[in-house]
Length: 222
Image 1 (tube, rainbow, N blue to C red):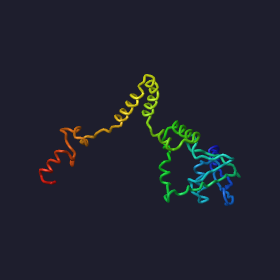
Image 2: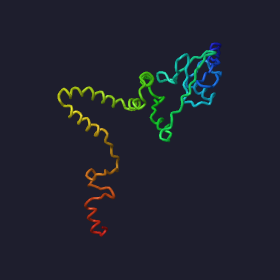
Image 3: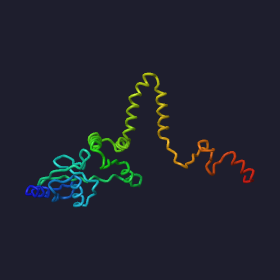
Image 4: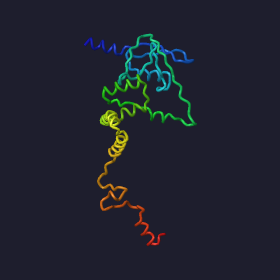
């Protein structure tokens, strides 16, 4: 029982850190838990200094702090008197008189929190280490495993087709396969816009053809 109470006290231990905000602002002090998520620390600093949360960069001992590590929330251990540098990134200028923040948010890719651990580690490596753009990460993680198998197989057989002088035919066959595999499935009761594919060559209402023109002429509608 005593060990549990000691662990709780350690978990709730508070330390006072010094915040040095880059700019004319004077240093301030903030009381925070000794062990805290970087995300929560960023939120506390933003609330304390009334700064925009998304534009805060935190630097401790010369290292920039990231909210995520290997796809999981990153924790940090703070000591009493630690000095934390805080930089507020300026907002980008408005282009052509329009605020493009919404467009930038649409292009940012965030991995779902329910993703598997190996996906989180891969995302952390590609995003943090290789610095791949969000649009490429979006393509990588939105494709299914089956799609990646087909892509890998395509690149494996492409040199074989080139060796047998079947490159153009291989590309044409790839195009036809993409068209066929991406055709939608007609639901029960749906009618195609092309009457030749419908039962009894049924046409859509309002279809303009030779018979319709002939009926309109005979009825004196022209």
